[in-house]
Length: 169
Image (cartoon, rainbow, N blue to C red; front, side):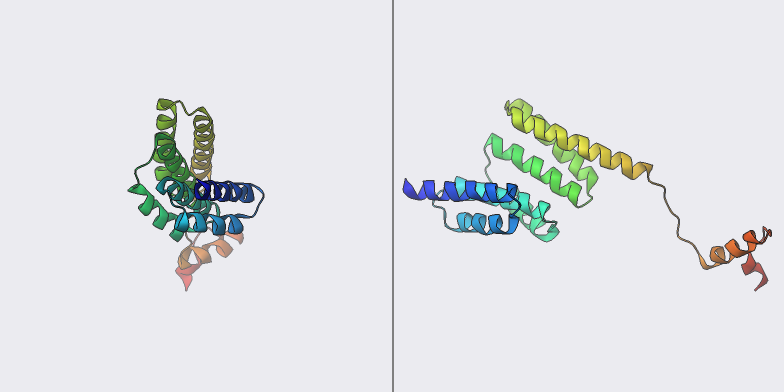
């Protein structure tokens, strides 16, 4: 069917545009496919790709809205895996690392079960990125907020006095 081929080609073009560094144009093409493609599976794939772009573009509101919509979709095994992987990437992007870790574990499990080896590879790479982010986060020094009383203690300590300057105010 010609219409199906047109929308598939437009979806493929959107992927190329994303890879080429033009995500806003890719998103516009995907929105056309999502709205007008005659087949549900093609519309669903376009929405899945818009979900990916929302995370990449740092659009938390669009990411959440699309995640909620997509959560109820009857996915194929590949789409389920992509959804879990794209969820992991978005959660990581938005610093929701526990959710990212759970989603990427789900993606790895699904990809292995269905022998989707390219997605296994991508999910394992995402897992490494998430684990590095978690490690960096736990290794970062925690800076406690300075209270007004503590802020006066620094000049007193520099002058060789150990007592707080706030005590003499």
